[in-house]
Image (cartoon, rainbow, N blue to C red; front, side, top):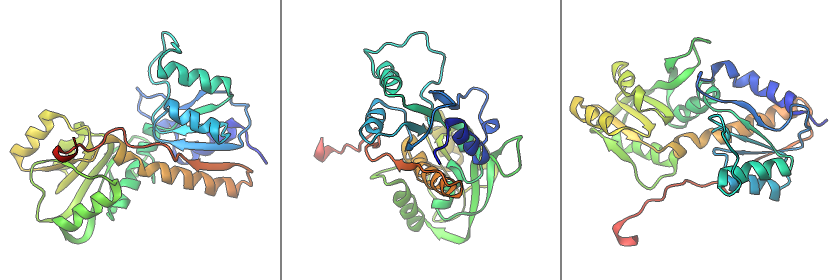
Length: 272
């Protein structure tokens, strides 16, 4: 059977409830109709013009992104810029767009559990617990059964994030037992990670003032970039939807974007 968008939304509610979204966020169906049928889903991190064009190329009628395509109220849709053209193309090709943002960040097994689990951490707890339940919330803090040395830990980080370099504030300890993470922009939670006894905090978009603070108190913060700390969760989202579609006997295709790439590249003196 082919589900409707409203059935897909109910399924998303089951593991990424909209109640977990921050009050300032905009999640759920952002383009399209709840009554539209779903035959093919394309999943990506960012709602970009290239992602819509990829959906058109593979005949996907539904896009699910982590970051919402409409975040603030629109005063105009200017089709001469990428954002306006994105909406025009999506609507003209009857493509539905769904956002699963901070609800997926806070959800159990969501963005932050994927990030922490990818580093091999266990005994996970929310760094900033939500009001919806003790296991949900922004960020995660966890431990290794036995302390790991700095090189081993950094190998885990580089392997998971698939980056060539990392920005680090403070000094990473020789031995690491407790690690806090927050996928995406998490500079504001650095002090909470420190207070809760983390040896290292991995997040992104770390502010200059936060980096200075970390250096002065002797706390290690790694900026793993917004894209790289959240991208692993798109794989989880695709796998989860494939699993649930199979359980519901939905005749749909679920695909992960093959064109989406990190918006930043590492530039070195010898290749500039």
